[in-house]
Image 1 (cartoon, rainbow, N blue to C red):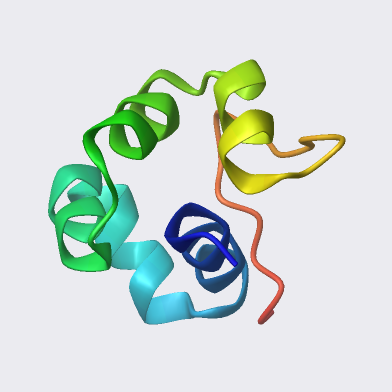
Image 2: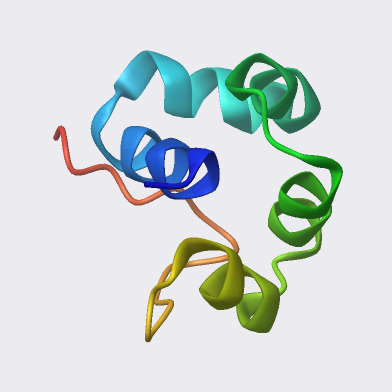
Length: 71
């Protein structure tokens, strides 16, 4: 599994991580150890690159809010 996919899953299930990401996405991305390409795709919300890098066939998420699976 890719580090990017791992991070996306964690952001949807870990309230503290999601809060940290909302405050400082670059710091969370750096801690996750994403490659430059993965980091750029996530920051740019580049669906095509995210699908290619994660192996997902569809990418579905809100870009203006954090979806909280832990609520």
